[in-house]
Length: 182
Image (cartoon, rainbow, N blue to C red; front, top):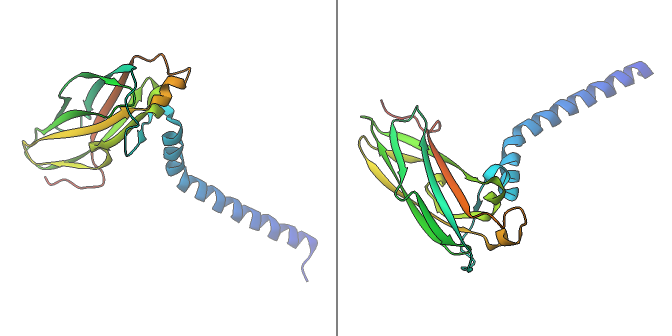
């Protein structure tokens, strides 16, 4: 038979173990949950993914394209055109080029964001090079498309309806998942 003090210690120990398990699970799930939250809300300019554009409206916005490369990645990366004027709701395509300036194959991954942040949830990508890793051979240049649309729901949002210019920005980093030769 256990004493009341022993029961309290056992209960406290079990609660501590449950608390540790809960906190470990929360820490493990925090990155995917945060990513999901950003995709749903457009937080910090996170764009959406879509399959098909809903159709053009009469309203147009200018989309500026920005390209950056980590100092750790020996690539040149730029948009073919620095901006484009698109009809809200219409499917559009832009091209970026990346050149590996090193003497070895290198794999990179692009991150992206949209500014102003309040329109991130309305900027929808149908196809993008940022969804996969890109491997370039020494001296190789790749032409990479992004297919997108600006969701007409933006026009109903008082925080986003008056936006006239959207900037889509990419930064390429060396991929950590794939070891490069060299």
